[in-house]
Amino acid sequence: MKKTRTVIAAVWATVFFIASAAGAVSQTYNFKLHHLLSAKAPAHTHMLDPWARQVEENSGGRVSIEIFPAMTLGGTPPELISQARDGVVDLVWTVNGYTPGLFPRTEVMELPNVYVNDPVAANLALFDMFESDLEQEYEGVEVMFLHVHAGQGIHMRDKLVRSPDDFVGTTLRIPTRTGAWIIEALGSTPRQMPVPDLPGALQKGTVDGAFIPWEIIPPLRIQEQTEYQIEGADMARFGTTTFQVSMNKARWDSLPEDIQKAFKDASGREWWAEVGRIWRATDDFGINLAVEAGNEHVVLTEEETAAMFQALEPVVERWIAEVTEKGIDGDGLVARARELVSANAN
Image 1 (cartoon, rainbow, N blue to C red):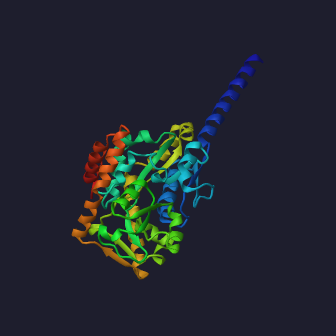
Image 2: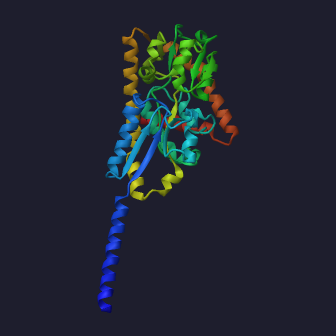
Image 3: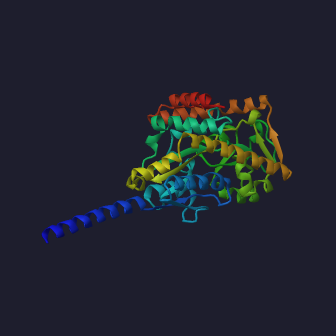
């Protein structure tokens, strides 16, 4: 009888172990991803949704990511990074520059004469710099990926600008402090605001134009509020904006290794490059839409482009001086960023 009880106990222990192991393997993980643009924006449909679905596939269906666009979980776009850090949401896609000074090292990729016209090269440079130069800025979150957009083109309501002198007396929207410095260097007045606020500002005449990529034209119907879209020769742009998709650090640390791997495998170096290709393609779509609507796509001559970049060189010097005062090797970061952008260029 005693032997029978021992056998029964052993059988039940085995059953319990198998059931527990099976439960651990089959456990599901649900995440909320919050961002600022609409569900129809290319960033949602072409980047965030495919990335989320890839993570889910990598996990064998154990991960579920629900995307909440247009700040539907509350708050304002500048609050997104704190929502991730505080665990209000699991994941965010946000603009680094909405919280000025919080990511000073990563700003290097936004600078004119560092970023020129290649989002793939810029994203790969960010990837190559991340662990060695940038990761320390992202306390409280686990970065899935960083990226830039296709670069700051110039959108004007009704004034054609082709030289730094043409900007004097204008007011232009920009999302970041480095962008504000660009506008100041051109003799214009910067107006910082989240991009969803731009259409209203253009309609009211609060701003004369904006420095943003062509990608944003369709979701915000910018072609209806502007007459000119202007860029430099050879698709040169005047700086860019950096973005991040990041997860609350405590949530990340709580995940088993195989679930973390599902995220990391979807967020590797090739994905960072692919995001650059996505933004270039959506940028092309945006400018074609504006031209079809009757807007004028202006490409500056090489001489006009050179004059613009010459006027903007003090922005780089200003950034180096400011971050150097904070103990950051600004000169070294600019040199490394330029080298890596060049090395990763197509």
